[in-house]
Every structure is written in structure tokens, then in C-alpha cells.
Image 1 (spheres, rainbow over the protein chains, first blue to last red):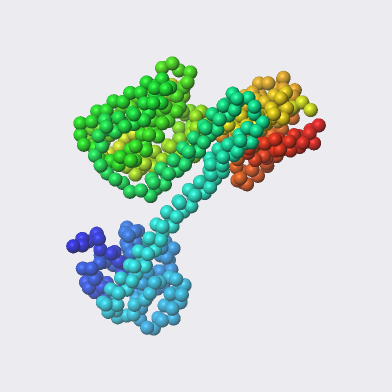
Image 2 (cartoon, rainbow over the protein chains, first blue to last red):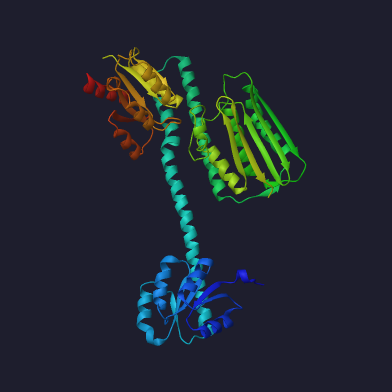
Length: 364
Length: 134
């Protein structure tokens, strides 16, 4: 069962009306056929139906030859595959046109239905291969750009901590004071933790790029209890009040691993960027699930984000503050994960008062 | 030769290493550490009158908020007699030649060192400073 929209779209241009009628009559069951008696009509069809895959054109037309027409649309509409219909007498111009890459092949006049169908099938294969190539090319370009950014960050984010540790080992030989040594070990540990975070995030990054969605029912109460047990330790040690409110009366479906990535990153930031000078420190999660969508806010009483930096915090390797050991990876991964789940995120931040991230997700 | 040092780097460990290496070389050398370039800039601006000690600035390039390049650009806006009190040396872990060359392109940047700072690289730096300024 194929509907009209699934048929391959082809366009036939010929100045003789009866040729058009004959062509359409014999092919319309298999293909969606557009016809045009002149070049202007043909261009109209191409503009209105950018998914036309194959264009047939008669060589002998008043005003403009088929070859000239193809030469023109090769620039303006490069995607459709071009097939010329011609009599033997035009063989010179046909050979010339083929050699210049303006036409894919030609069919001799008067045409046989079998020839036309075989030409369409061949052209369609060629079209699909070309389209696929264009898509792959775009993907490849994106991967290449990202690789460039990685290569750049490697020298800073990976080599940086390594150079630090090497430097520390180097001066350890000259340190005799035990407290000084302990301070340095503490700094070395922090540096290695940063490197470790970077590697773990890089892992997230790659599974996000390649991974498929695994949908399941999400019980947000249970989901956040899991995260509460992970972040409860930090909350206790740093004396940060940690509250989670969930209101879920309906079934919600999503990818649990991606949700975990999103909220682990947001919570980790909420705890990391606290203002140590404050007495009352808090992290509050509010989750409201209704009418097929989840609205979850993660708010903190932290240092806040400067207005001029907010636009950039979701960029890869961007860091807005020197406080704490950010890798510039976290929020980028959050954004990518949300994109996969058709969700979005809003930020509200006041310097020295705190930041609230609001995530809105549809049930999938 | 009396010298002071300013280290501008967001990495605590790298600041610690630089400070220790400098102090091990000469305990009396004053080393001031800034984890943010903006703070260093403020300090340089506010101590204009009292800064009579020639000061080496060890500057990291990739830092949040204000990076090394932005720092240099702001520094070059200071009055010449202030700039003359300082010599900027890049101290970075990067192997990226574009970044290094870009930094060396600034008039106030003397040279670039690779992290980590060691006794040997500090020795070379001091030799270079002595050669140029004293």
C-alpha cells in the first residue's frame, strides 16, 4: 500500500501537450508525475516541490533547449536528477551535455515505457546516494568541528592537571615541611579529581552522541530518592539544606539514564557553586508532573551567574567562574540530553543570591 | 637584583607550585597569587604609586571570566610608566602554537614558558630578566 505522498516525484517538461498527457497516463500509477509545457512552469514546480527527485526534459523546445534548461537548473535546483529526452539527430549536443555533467542520462525518442521506468529507478538510486552523502557530509563536518575543539581542550583540560602533578612531584624533593607537603597533596588530589571529572564527562558526551533512547516509566519520587542518597552526603558535610518536592499523579515516560545525567549535572552544580560566606545554604528541587509534561526546577542559594555569562553557559568548554573545578562540559551535556528528549531549560540567576534551572520535559 | 612575582592562574595547584619554586630559589622574593585575572588587574591599578619593585607576571592563558589575552589587552591600556614596572611571561600548559604565537605577538609579552614551572625554567627566566632589564 503506497499513498500518493510516498511515491517518487518526477517532473516532465515538453512543449507538446500530447506527449505530456501520454507520459503522465502511463506512469501516474507508479509515480507522482508533474508536467510542464514550458520552462517557467517547470521552475514553478521545482520551487513548490523541492522533493522532486527526477526531471525529464525534451531537447527540442522553442526558446530554450533541454540541455540549456538543465544547465540552468543545475545551479538553481541542484538536487533533482536530470534526464534528457531526445531524437538521434541531437546526439552531438547530448554527448556534450553528458560530458559537462549537466545530465544523468538520456532516453531516445519515441520512448518506451520500460526505458523510462528503468531510467527512473537508476536515477532514484543515484538521488538517494547523493542525498545520503549530503547528510553524511554535514554530520562529518560537525564531528570534525567537535574534534577540533577537543584537540584544543586536550592541551588545557588534560595536559593541565598532568603538568601540575608533574610539577608538584618535582618540588616535593625540596619540601621538608610536613604541613606544606599535606597542602600540596590536597591540591594534587583536587587536580586529579578535575581530570577524572573531565574524563567521566567526556564519556557522557560520547554516549549522548551515539546512544539511542531507552524509554521507560519514570517514578520521580523514586528517581529523586536515588539522587538524594548521592548528594545527601555533600549536603550534610557542607551544611546545605537539601529539599525535594515531587507531585506526580500520572504516568511519565522518558529515558532514565538521560534524566539522571541532566539532574546529576544540575544538582552537582547547585552544590558546587554555593556561597561559603552564607549561613543559610540550600538546594531545592520541585518536580511537577501534569498533562503529559514534567516541570522540574533545581534552585540553589549560591554565588549566581553574571548576566553577561548566562548566554554562554551551555557552550562546550565554557566556564563562567574560577570557583570550584568546572570542566565546561556539564551544561553542554545537559543541553544535548534535553534536545534528545524534546525538552528545554530556562535559567534564572541573581548574583550572590542564587540560581534556578527549570527543566521542562514532555512524556515520550 | 630585587624582584617580585605575580602569578595569575585559576589552577590552585599550579599557583602553589609556582610560589614554591620561586620561594625555594630565594626565600625573600615576594610572590602574590591571583586566581582571577581581574583581581590582578585591580591590584596593579591600585598600587600604582607604591609599585617600585620590578615585577614578573607569570600569566596563564586559558582562565574563566578573564583569560590571559584579555588581561594583556587591559594591561596595555595602563600608562607606560606602570607597564615598565612589569614583565609578562606566559606560563601555560598549552602546546597550541596559535595561542602561544598570538600571546607573543603582544608588545608587553616577553616570552612563554611551559608548565610546570621548575627550578631550571625559573633559572632560565631569571637569567633572561637580568639580561634584559638590569
